[in-house]
Image 1 (tube, rainbow, N blue to C red):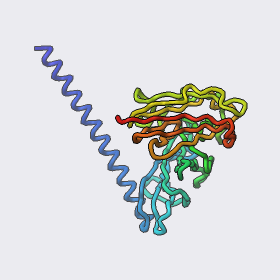
Image 2: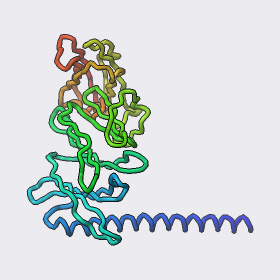
Image 3: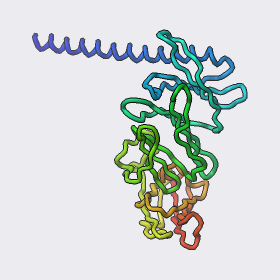
Image 4: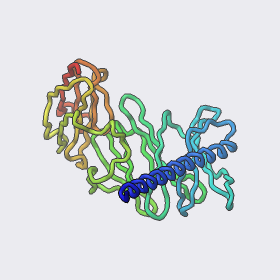
Length: 295
């Protein structure tokens, strides 16, 4: 009998605890919706896409509102609370010159601000453009940016970000008031909280490694690869911090580039991936031939 009563009490506590979580989540959703509705009153002609809560340089909460204005441009508007009430004041506004921007908030340090990363990728070369904003003294301050990075990708971690362009990699770590380049970092040591799980290498992925030294491809693990439709090829440079650059060029149609050295086999046929040291030294280029069969 005692065991039955104990089991009943445990189940009751679990249900009560689950209800509290459910109510808390529901309250958070309503609170976010209420904030969005209040902010929309200040932007009557804009279509609000999202609202991002951030901490400014003083540790106070602000809201960055992303919206589309009447000219079909993407706007960033900054709001903060006034006094004790839920009253919002427009502090700053910027217009983004990005075609299809993506946004992410990430922390810079334990005590003060969080930052808003904005990026997009354009064209057949997957050119990356990005900006990182910090709220300081009531304004949106641009603290980092990059433009037209070939086959570019950017990932954040607490206190910084990892930037790649083709097969090069850099780390930028926040140091109280600015980002500092850190070439000592190993990308495997940072939490990958940016790339979706669908784009990460898995058991259905074939690995090909290479090295670029003294302006030539000094090592290539395999120059002929066989894949089935739906499989992935992960092309990984073993010395990405070495100074020599290497451009990665690939044919379209049978494979597609997923970013971060990852290729997806799309349909039957043959595709080529060419590694060009220095970006233009075709006499020392290496080619990987990819043969794709039905899944």
